[in-house]
Length: 341
Image (cartoon, rainbow, N blue to C red; front, side, top):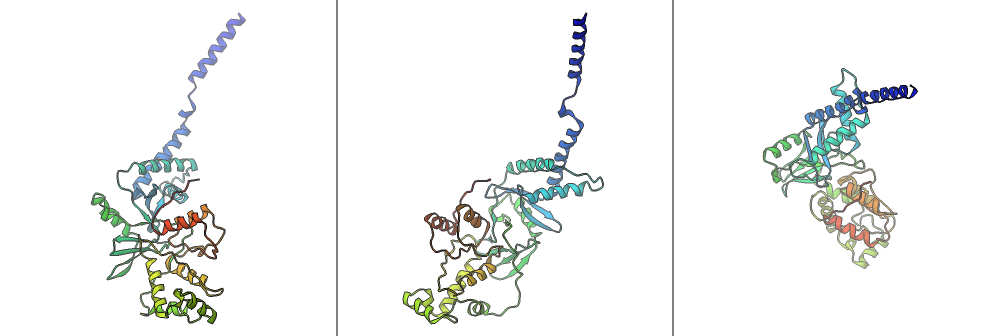
């Protein structure tokens, strides 16, 4: 009798367990999955363009307030954009979305971008050719994502909305290479360039090199002059030739896709070498760190080269072979790879 009662009780327990719904069928979990799917649909509707760049990074052209930017989809700023999209589309309900759902939505968008049947598009640092050897673009790296367009007949500041017209033209051409839109990539070390003035003296560069730098021998000590004359360095040239060389070095830094000069600035202590280099950096590629000194590690220098258009190494008494080889590779346009952490 006792055995029969125990058997009946065990049978009831087994029936209850069979009829209990599994955890993944819970209503709460269904809501969470639908949140990420809903956010993906919102993003695909509101983001004008997804692409993969030359570094195999999924990127997107997105609207931020009243301008357009290029973002890496894997960047934290893109998560912030997705969160804001969710809020804007659920403002009346005041529904928040979890970090996990945000990351699920981003993972889905990354997968979609990687499956796109279109060519990879290069993202540039500071300068790029819109039309090879004809029209040059310079990124002002300001909050409005404006660019300067330079041609033989005109110099103009263009709005970030221009990027939408270029995307449309690129798509309508069937992704023709000569219609590729200009996308600039930015990093946290970059700083905003000042807006150029339309009124300036015709000899502005001569004035700059003569009065604000030590390129000429105007401020050179007699000891330094004897030194350069003895060793027949560039410093022994006449002032007109020195300024011409300095102009070529400066202007060449604004030209994209060419091997650039590796300039070794030498001089006696107090000869304004670092002063000259800092001014050069501000004119071409303003950044949070204007010059970099020792110690120089492999990881640090790879990041500096990857995140800057113009890199200055200061107070370097000697260069190891690996750094010499890497520097030569960078200035001639070769690439390098870093392991993602």
